[in-house]
Image (cartoon, rainbow, N blue to C red):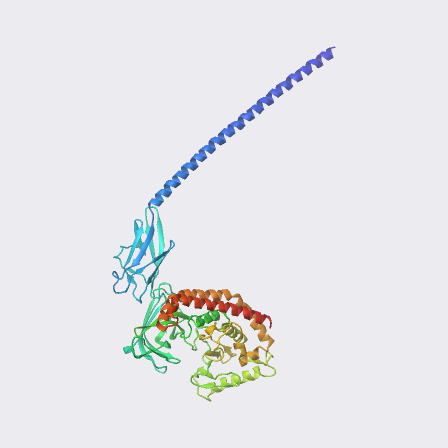
Length: 544
């Protein structure tokens, strides 16, 4: 009985403890719910504070933006008035503000002094040009080089680069012979004053070179009947310019002998320069470097020219050493010349100075004879005994491809050059004038030209030569778009000069519309022709 009573008391105690535990659990649960509620209230308060802060920040941003907008800084317009600049300008010129960073200004007349008074309107508290405050219509500024124009206000600063171009925007070359004597001979040098002024966007922006020089004609001298004067006038001819000391033109290697190319038969004025660009992409040891200029000869505008390297033996030009050779293939011979059995035109020896029958003459004539015997002999494919013993493969391949891609009608026929060091092999090049190329007179983009000459026809019978041609063509084909972009860039650069050149020489028919538009269409046709030409050649070489 006692055990039963003890068990009952113990059981009741456990029930009581269990009840107390339940109460504790409920209290804990209640506390946890209260804690969660407090956390939610805290989060809600913090979010409200954050939202309020965001609203405050947004309000401050709006205040700042309003303050910013109330104090703008920008150039509204800029111009040059002939009344402010009567010596330099013949008509007013309004500038174009491009975006928020560039100002382009075109002065329509020829000028070598760009110290001009600008007029402008701006929003802001001050405007400076190259760090100096300027006053509209009063301050004289030198615009030969690109200048920095800055407009400031209480809240803003805006910077522009200003380019002031004169005439067509390419460098201007003045040649003035003594007493304005016509350069009518190729055998006589004429004393002259030279002045070369770079434009604001060319290689050495704003630089000026002045010198006493000697000038002579190169090639055939053409004349034309003036529209204004009854007398005959000098045409668009080539000229050699000789300085008394070595000079660098357009940052190129120093020399005292330079040439002006007229591109008189090229309405794009880009064919020779495009070939030179391809030459700089090639394995040829030297390609001439030329730059476009507008020529003023004895006070008259003579159009768009190219100024650059002469064809001569020099370390930075055609480097053939002190006893090497430069040869020209052309029906129009120069000095001492000779012929071979398989080259269609005579070869003139330009370097060194030789007499018929002297040692240098006999050496080069004998070398060409041996080269032809190897090339057209039965064993011509043999690398050590055939044509490769005498001819440099790399130059023969790259020179060929550039001329064939361009479909240069003069290649291996006229204005074609070879060179060699006396201890080396015969090399093709350098490249030279190529006006009859790149779709000249709407020629077909298909068909081979250079490959049909005797030497190259024979070279294509050697699988080793063909393999090298295919390998190198793949390289040029890979650069097709690069070449086309170069043409586009040069055309854009030349479009104003091309227009003035056409006005001078009647390149495009004015009755057919804007000559600038006609020029760009002509260049577009050239690019289209080149693309089709390279695609056609890619197929032809792929089938070889």
